[in-house]
Length: 113
Image (cartoon, rainbow, N blue to C red; front, side, top):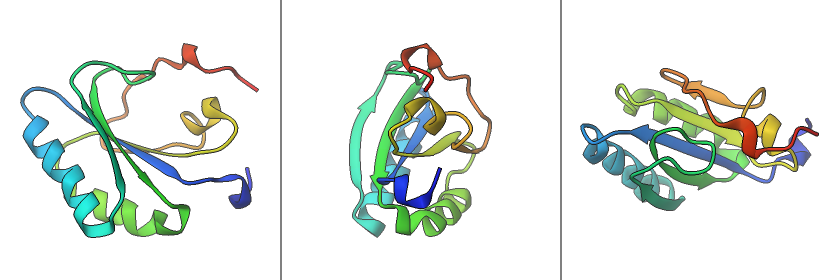
């Protein structure tokens, strides 16, 4: 994958009923600090994500700053960061970065290219 293939990134912050308030606050801080687009607060598994989550979208030129900020502020939450390319399977596997404990995604929804 070349950098020119990347159209942006998604952050998926994972949480449960005991950590939802912190997760919402964390993602709101990302929005306030950087102006990133926030997704819905999903209180059920959605897509390949096995637990509750919230998505944040950002541009690739902010990658390093976002990773550092998340690592410093995520507390114990698991966070998936992946590129947006034409290959969603690779985006969510070998091209993804996990902060915290990795979760097992449901990759059956993606087609391997």
